[in-house]
Image 1 (spheres, rainbow, N blue to C red):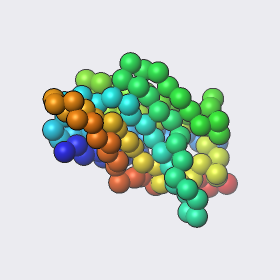
Image 2 (cartoon, rainbow, N blue to C red):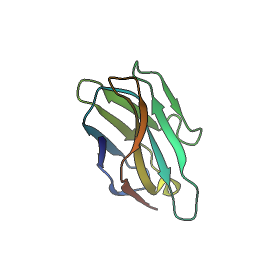
Image 3 (cartoon, one colour):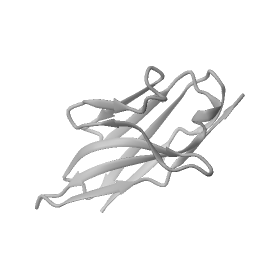
Image 4 (tube, rainbow, N blue to C red):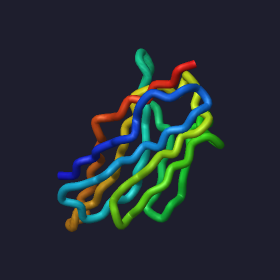
Length: 120
């Protein structure tokens, strides 16, 4: 089992910045893709940013140029630097990770989420 724990959420004014962190722990063999999703009240969960093990990234159009995803493979961590935050960025942000065990079995894991609130 792999556990993901997010941190760094909070309240920020529009135009401000936040950095989210996510730590993977447990019986880790190899973590492949990692990423961030978000879900605002009454809306579907959506992909914010993803990053492969070798550092290739992809972003939702709504956050391109404002958010940056990065990772530290040695620490099994993924980060989301959020800048120029807008009220519409407010949501619960979830970390995800695709894990492969020593037998080659793959599983996807989710964190419990961290709340980001943006005041206008």
